[in-house]
Length: 405
Image (cartoon, rainbow, N blue to C red; front, side, top):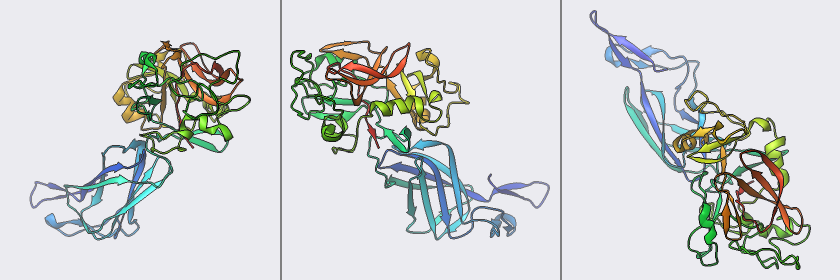
């Protein structure tokens, strides 16, 4: 509420504000969403106030039972990957102490203290710009804010988009948007291709485990007569422990995901299963959708407040009956659902050798879990069903979505 008072020497009253508006312009050096902003000052700024003075010189006096701290709590966490404005009313006056504490959706905090006094004028806007905020978290660039349970006591954050690779430069990156995929251009797969690919055989991180087809641009079939020529570790080995280097995120630096090896990993089959079927309220936290015109599956974080519930797009539905049960524009997804922690995995199709098919109608995402010498487990979905424990032939090119945690 904005306190005001009325003053007049005749039958006409003039209304005056007793507060000013402080505009916080915030941006972060990390992938983070803000849940609250708190200000601590050298005097009480929150509570029951008294008014002193007369005429146009009236001001808010001491707040006997108040607090020197006031907090702006956001109903939905807001991303500050790029600059965003937040507004707070404060009593007018000069503040010799002015401390701002920004809290992220994961409860990490960043505190900044003004180096000089801050003047807040009645009825005017004072802008405070805080750039490059760092929350001291282990999350690298490229991580989304939503927190997902994948085992009892274990949570992860998903990457901002599917993994992509450019063979001509040996560069790995995350897709810019969650709905981005390469599609039919994956058919150009080769060791010298200057475009990008995003459908990979299992364990094709580039780490030479002694197998023949270990490069991300590999497209050859199995040699059924020689099980030594396989994608990924041979035998009863998953992409963990000694063989973790066959995991794309463990072995490689992701250029827009911290640019250092060992920062990311692939979910195990058990973790995918826990995420989709076992965590608290799991059945209500996944649903089919169309985002920015792209079909796929939405995954909701453990804690989620639907920012679209009272919007024209309607509340999220966990139905698997149709891609159109949840439809979001690019703007609604980015500014609302993604900011609230939601993840979208697109139906990016699959690749057999250099043949790409089912783009937009089927999705397959590798896990790091071994099935047998010919197959590995992953998540598969189409318009009819969504399932884990789907055993795919290892040289079949599928999508990869990495996690941190």
